[in-house]
Image 1: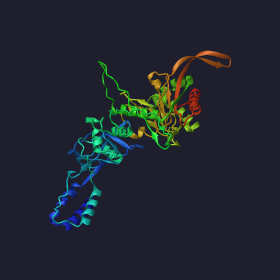
Image 2: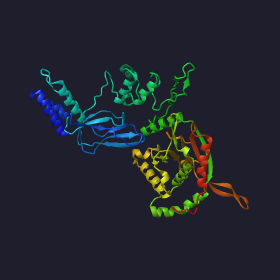
Image 3: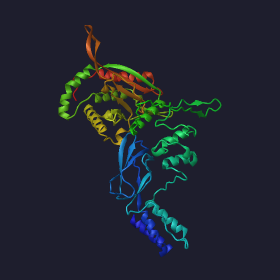
Image 4: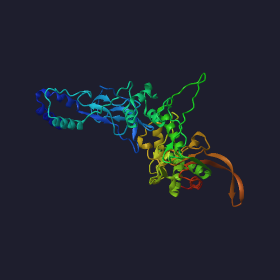
Length: 473
């Protein structure tokens, strides 16, 4: 890099003369590099800045964390790949930044990003020489300028870019009521403003207001009209406490509302007799704990049964993209896990169909432990093709789960309880005590009909009921 700078400096010095060699200061200032928002997982296109760990002017070592970011439900740190000084933050806390965009400028020589070329105007150098030299220097490192025009408050680059694209004037931005820190306009605010046709008389809530189904006007079949309704106002009574949603709860809320708006949900229920499975687990769990050093739960068994059923009914393992159905090759099972905060997260078991029962058990335990300790990576929650949630953990006998988009189905496993049941024997029917559980299968009725959705959950129940009591693990 320094050899390139030296050639540029000498080129400018020859054409500008000694009096113009003050440009050396500007080129030195350009010995900076951009800290880029990294790509942290499949399908992750943007991340939110949670907090800056370094301030402008602070020194930074190689691989030292500069800021914390959040993607979906996982928090991560962004380290610097170079040692130097943080000269400029390009975004504020709370801003949403696209992957691949510069988020900060770091200078190895303590240069400032605001340095300007000090070229005398009495004797101009050849334009081609200056232009070529500056272009080469900018290839080494250059900081993008961020301007809010005549704004009286700060707007993030993302908000400004959306405003320019949509033709929103600065006066409109100034009049837009923001929900961010210090009333700052967020990405959600400006998108809601655009969606509402440029009306912002109501403050945008943390979760998007539900919209009605699009209606096609009879005179223009190619145009649609969307009627939006704001959430009802909530009055406060004496003694009420206001608790602000944390970032993860806001993300979950947005995701759940989006899922219900996207997919018409249908839920089928089946009750399974899992007596053989319960007796088998009670028999092997002690030896498994002694041999593997960890517990054997019902979750890996449920996942194995679901994987087998997906192989029997592969059109459950799909996604919808417009008018196309994407049939997934891999079977990646997400398992909903409750965090100590009460929030939910869905780590994913990749290629679950290639694992035996021991491998599934170890993977389930590992992901569950890392979820509870906030040690999951962004890749751990990406790529799921089907999700299972164990509501029985909380003592619930059944549930109606919401689909984890862009998947088309999810299954809830209820609590296993003892019940009196009719048992058919060769000597006639008799009453006995059996272990029973409900399976709840919610699916997207756009692409999964009741027959397929019902047969799938019935097949899962069959695999659990027909469990081999002599199986080794």
